[in-house]
Length: 223
Image (cartoon, rainbow, N blue to C red; front, side, top):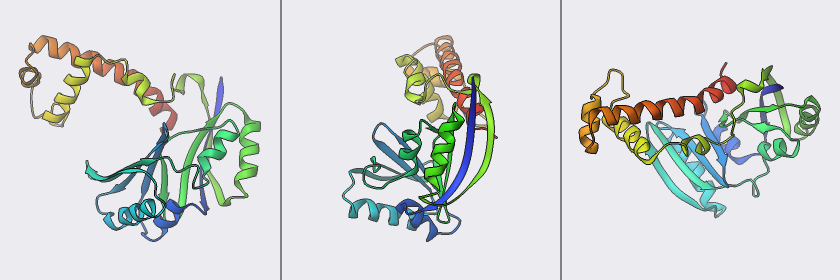
């Protein structure tokens, strides 16, 4: 089956895009799933995140607060789709599927979507032009084997056993996946109280499952 993949940017009345315009060169990344939004801002964008938190609080959006993780400020909040009209809702209404995350930079929102139906794309674009200034930055065809079997990461993470999850998490925390590696499999195994061969098996199975889930996404979003 053939799919069409569209990249576009739009400048419209969306608060997170407007805030990004106040901080030139700073990118806001946003994911939306399960009635939850994740907002990510680089560590040097504290002022930008502060503006976003202020907006969230002013609209009484439920949120878990902001934390710093892996060089980013990260905010988790209840989905704001019903409060702020947005492009994702428009995609869904025209049977188009968003590819997360969206990016907001210098007042523009950058989005990617896929659809198996060109008529759906055409009707979506006809509505999109009413929202604001936009331009298509890339359009290409992709194929069924590049589309993930499920749209949500949790669906393939759920295939991991409890010990596979623990082994991968502990290995990551200890630096096993760093380059160069900071610890050996035996170090990870000892910290878990299991044998080296058992730990190695858990890591290998987990890696295989995770890669099988991730590769379709890399094909879908890759350049």
